[in-house]
Amino acid sequence: MSIDDLQKSSFQRIKAYTQPQLCTSGDWIISFYAFDPVQGKLRRKRIRVPPKFERVRDRRAYANGLMDRITQQLQQGWNPWITVTSNQNYATWQDACSAYTRYLDRQEEEKMLREKTKYGYLRMLDMFNSWNSQQAAPIYYAYQFDYRTLVRFTDWLWIERKLSVTTRDNYVTWLKLVGAFMKEKAFCLDNAAECLKLMGKKVKGSKNRTVIPKEQMQRLSRWCADNNRHFQLACYILYYCFVRPKEMSFIQIHHLNIYKGTLFIPGVNSKNGKNGTVTLPDKVTRLLRELDVMSAPADHFLFSKDMKPGKTHVSPKQFSDYWDTRIRRQLNFPEEWKFYSLKDTGITDLIKDNTDLLSVRNQARHHSLLMTDIYTPHDIAEANDVIRHRVSEF
Image (cartoon, rainbow, N blue to C red; front, side, top):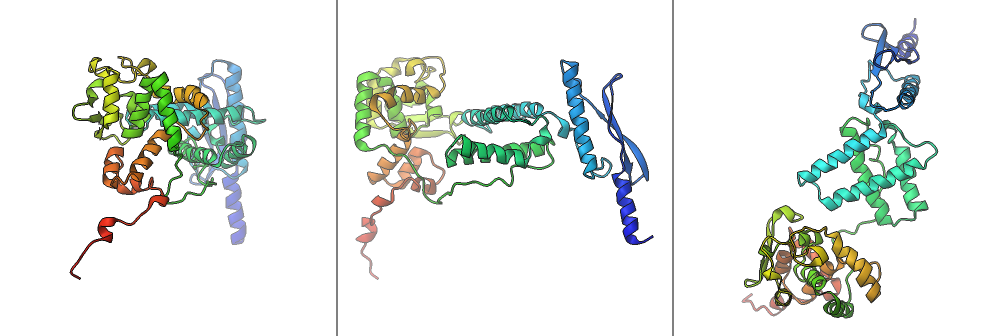
């Protein structure tokens, strides 16, 4: 017998198998035989069908789908005694989603993930599941979270939903994270999203910031002064102190020191997890006095219900909600001018006022001057007078 014949014979023996059968007496077991090259004979393989279904027909549908999958793999040359595949691969997609949600919850508890980020991921998961449920053949098992499915989903986001390049790329980034989770937890053999490409082009060293023009900032200030001075205070703290909305929602009265002109941001509430102290400009401390917020109990939140001091913590979403429902409508602000745009506007205006970048960095609590320099508009770059007029003996 030639070497080719021997190789062909060995390959045929390795491919040898029997059709999967379901036994429902006692525990539901799917069994089949596959050739074990180590023992040189067919060997029985058993896979238990989980008893977690309320209805028998759902459990049977799961078992039938599992047998179809096993048969397909056997036909393609898979051998359970050569490639050991975890039973996790046969878990349902819903099981994988539940595990992923618990994983995000735990990350948030350990401060490894921001609350806003977690809910953003969950919204993307909801979008994927909504799309999946409308497909002619929706994925049911975890292993079906494959590259072709993800390509169809991202194409749907871009072509059918007409989402922006940035939003589509945000989904791709999220899918890569989900794919890594699925692989790590043995729901899938590979990260199906690894080959997905980002469409947008990032320009290093610059940031496309939406800055609100000065005359519109004046309109905003006048409107807030006439209609809601507590929201004006929130705008001031974001614009002058660069305190993020989530951090603002956790400010308590004892964090404020209007005599020293400082605001303390505990690390447990900050984005970078570090304690920080920022300067309160006179305009902010004056408004704090006028609103008499310092008379509230020390442990009360500065922005509770209706953005007034109170003992109840309120989600930072109240700031953006008020901006979208009142400010945008009353002042006819475009979509790109968001509540968070006040922070970008404040940093840019401070730099335009020739404030040194080190002071801006400290106020913004950036980790480096490189981050602060991203906000510097190129149209204000000028010669440094100290360097320009320096006299030397050389």
